Length: 129
Image 1 (cartoon, rainbow, N blue to C red):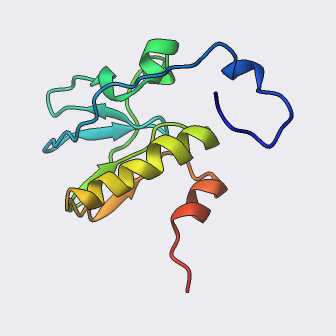
Image 2 (cartoon, one colour; image 1 turned 90 degrees about the vertical axis):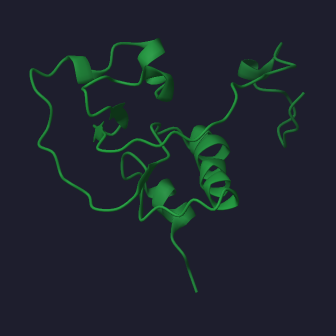
């Protein structure tokens, strides 16, 4: 069971003794696009890679509600898309470890895409002296 400073285990964690995640991987794409703060990955042929975005399986995203895609901004260099979630827990326990995985694999992107500009995201990755 999770350890906590609270006297009781939160209701969400009761009954969850084992949790497994899918195998981790790094996907490299050339000339792909990224849309919206959910960071939908779209191949150069126009396919959405739904396995990279857990939002796809939970509800219909706004990517399907717009008649056209937003204006594209071309980025020269390697872009690592590491976040598609605005939840603090997922940021700390999924996204931050992705950054360390890239470092461990010696993958050095020129830019990281972190989705929306939540303050806690910036605060946790900005270097301080």
